[in-house]
Image 1: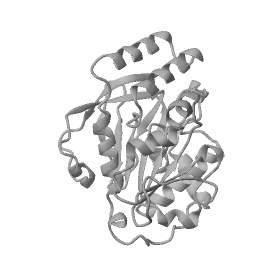
Image 2 (image 1 turned 90 degrees about the vertical axis):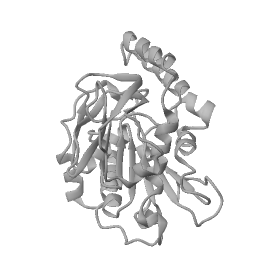
Image 3 (image 1 turned 30 degrees about the vertical axis):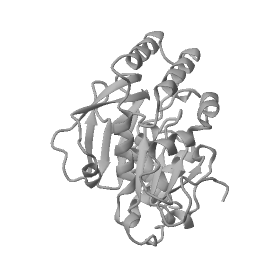
Length: 305
């Protein structure tokens, strides 16, 4: 296996997760955190108890887990990316098919930002350019009232009416997949979070980001003229006011989601992966729910959807 193998703890009996990196490490992320992999594992790791293990795959470079190994994983996390979730790149097509495969296997899939959008697309929803333009900064997200029927929400001490999260995106979910439910929304984005049953969760914001990562990204976006100066100034203002993002809540939510599931609590020998990854029909279906490909600025190397 060519993937970078990351053990969050020693041992072989704990849960195992695959981190699907849809972006390259920024110079800042490498210098301060040793790469985005470490940012994600630090934020979401630990919920699986002793022996938890994380394997990372740079899917943006065409590095994917082998089909024969998919049954070994309890969950998959798809990261943000500077690419469009509705793009025609070969690796995005392959990622859509992988998501369809592991979802059919009953594996838990958590999508963050771009991952939230590509999860929506792979499961039959529609994504495209944000109707209200760039959303950058620390923003308040409101939860839908009377959310019931999700076991992973029960692991939280309390579900607040709203919570702040770091946002950096100019694409969004247009229509949620069949059988999905909207969990949260914001002033600019109608679908801030959605879930399909207990095994698919998309979050538009960045639960894993810290304020310093946001501010560095704002500087890079401004330096590349990807966002207007007013957008950057507003992002900095939101980061300085209000106490920052409710990161502890969001990371707890993600860990609660990832650690659940019968496959994780019981036998680690689920059924073999169905023939979805190699299916032309699956790839075609992935694009049937996609928005038309548009020449968007979010193709810049700094922006992360």
